[in-house]
Image (cartoon, rainbow, N blue to C red; front, side, top):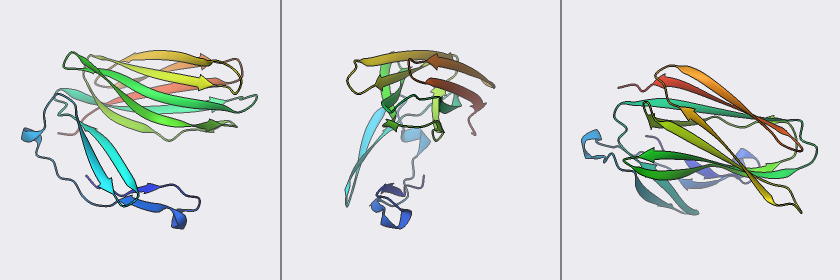
Length: 165
């Protein structure tokens, strides 16, 4: 796996190099139980959660926000059950001020399990509102879910495909 991670600092040439390198994993040595590995760089650390996902599929999550009346903070996380334990992965955190498509999030999940996506919406001066949607993993196909907020609409699409072996 290539690991050129940067800290966004304006224009691309202004970004700080966090870590840069290659990580090689031996499938036989990777546990099925999720393990967190910390990689330390010059300007900070990156925590990576690793697991050997046998009998798994690739989930590509796409999120589009439309019709926001005014800005709000959005946090997205994925809760997935592995080996009878749940693990929450932070996918996105930021301010939404206009209609936009977020970058794609790609992860491996066990086949025939349920992946839960958690959306926390924080409007300045209001309570934090949490919305959840669940998707059952499949070998092929896609599913979508729409979340109607007071001041915006969030469309979530998950596309399933087999992992390359």
